[in-house]
Length: 153
Ligand SMILES: *[C@@H]1O[C@H](CO)[C@@H](O)[C@H](O)[C@H]1NC(C)=O
Ligand SMILES: *[C@@H]1O[C@H](CO)[C@@H](O)[C@H](O)[C@H]1NC(C)=O
Image (tube, rainbow, N blue to C red; front, side, top):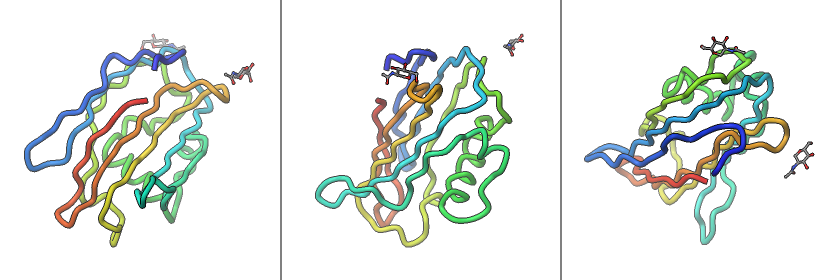
């Protein structure tokens, strides 16, 4: 932040008792876009954060037109579809305010994912280098499930 072509009204952590922390945000995206690059990267903390399992950099509009059928990309797409379906409307996208409450559920973690500390980076980029929104989510996988906190970029 600040973003050049969008206005973040708020983005906050809502810790909840016996449930994963929720992210609540509202962002206005005044322009319309036909190409929106989405970057999603997962990192696992060994001694430092190392790339792990998920590394996606693709045109979100193309993904929405042709949803992935298998693999990690399908897994990520299915989570987005379950948790924020309003993001998956056909492009052009924008010209509106997105108000989103979001959290990862235990069922979203891939099976047999190692316990430990994770970082998830999420970024939307237009016109090759303008960030519409970016965030980093820090989470821990314990035997009891996901516990998460976050930080915006
Ligand atoms: C943007 O949204 C407004 C209100 O929903 C609508 O009237 C307008 O036509 C839209 N503009 C474009 C370029 O789609
Ligand atoms: C962003 O891209 C535009 C057009 O490709 C270029 O003119 C500009 O220098 C770039 N800005 C940065 C910060 O890379």
